[in-house]
Length: 172
Picture (tube, rainbow, N blue to C red):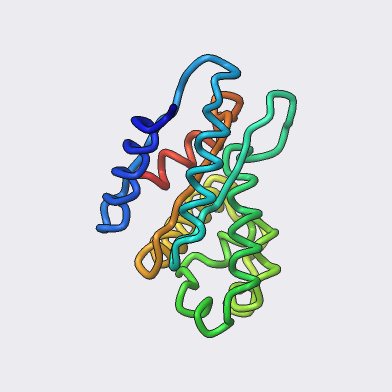
């Protein structure tokens, strides 16, 4: 009974596959099946070759930095660890040192860790944040140029201001 909604999601995916950044906002009352619809749709998408789905979820009572991106970054780390190191080397962003300072879990990725340099003490936290998000954006863009990339953040309404700001910068 969700053919219309699936058609809209398929159209957004088609635009993405054509190289157009696309944002879809799914909303409705709690318990309507929004998450189930998206989960089933994205499971089908993941079966398609060359498509990566990075999934995150915000929780009301969770308090972590950039909680809107927390699960996405964890998924990105798992994806890159499982990717051949030569391919990952092509994704390394210029701001990799700031990226790893902002999201330390990405240091699990050998190619990223090897390319990073130590940042001097006393670097302004706002500069770390700005350049770290810039590095994340560059990394995601490089991946998206080679494969279809889907980010799904469930329950974004429970996100934090830092995560919302970072997400806005990623989507600009």
